[in-house]
Image 1 (cartoon, helix red, strand yellow):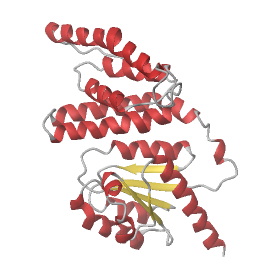
Image 2 (cartoon, rainbow, N blue to C red; image 1 turned 90 degrees about the horizontal axis):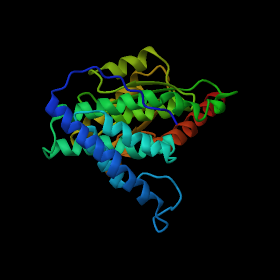
Image 3 (cartoon, rainbow, N blue to C red; image 1 turned 45 degrees about the vertical axis):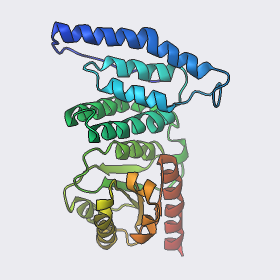
Image 4 (cartoon, helix red, strand yellow; image 1 turned 90 degrees about the vertical axis):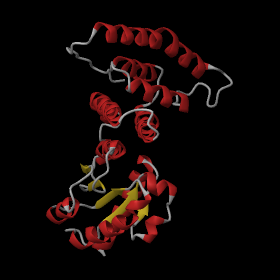
Length: 278
């Protein structure tokens, strides 16, 4: 597993440093051993299989809010060392923790700046783990395959788009050329589709208030795309709650997570190619 690199030279008040050290000591001496023991219990679900459970996500999310980055990194390394696959780290730890931070902000458990810092830390961890994540397949499936291109974007104004970045990593690992535009300026996705060829356009939405904009964006994408048979996939928190919106707004399909998005995109692009050949 990839190691998380650390380099810090910031000056911290002695009182804050003492609090950090106490929390860090607690994580190392109490919390991690208990987590490791809990995952080893023979009566647990999928005993013997390294997995992430809701308690892991909650603890990790809270550790991201600590003044020091060390507790979150130690927890992450503990999961890696007990054999949690990086796919699970990305999908079952990073993405749910990011959503939980957003929920904590909505109920005033933490500030917007704290959430932003927590998400920035997750992005840093993803960057450090990226070589190991991509090496897990080594692009073997790309041999003999035509180039595939996907544009991933949210609607303008979305504040937290870590899930989109996670999705882009999965597509790149599967040898797609993936361009990710989180929270684009109005008109940017249409301009990008007009200027460059993409096989697939993946669009993420979070709130009910975005339904109208979602439909308009899908129509505009098809109208402006260089690819007359552009495949449009939708996902995100809103679509998880209301999957029927996929048909209502004119998308080609909806995916609940990264593996489902990869499989659906590959299948629909294959159909695209078969239509062009015929």
